[in-house]
Image (cartoon, rainbow, N blue to C red):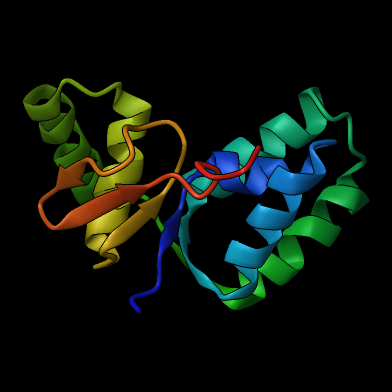
Length: 134
């Protein structure tokens, strides 16, 4: 099975009081995959503002993720591709940037609950890893 690309919401569930979703996120992430600097940035923002984690606690979550996942940079090409995807598929820009990053990473699966399960973008399939979680 191809390695997935993780959207920010999968990482955020690691901090959730919803044990089933937290366990599902942990199981998906334990297998490794890909994410972008955007995902790291968004996770850090949520961890600080909403979860009110200390910087050291954020590091404790991010360090293992960075070691098991390939982290991809955001480039001007990523931005341009995202802008075109946003227009073509009527996506919000930040979602399009995640899709563009996943495509550039040559992933075939994007794990997210922000887009429609089963939706496809140029060979990239969207899968909601929490779809069957109560």
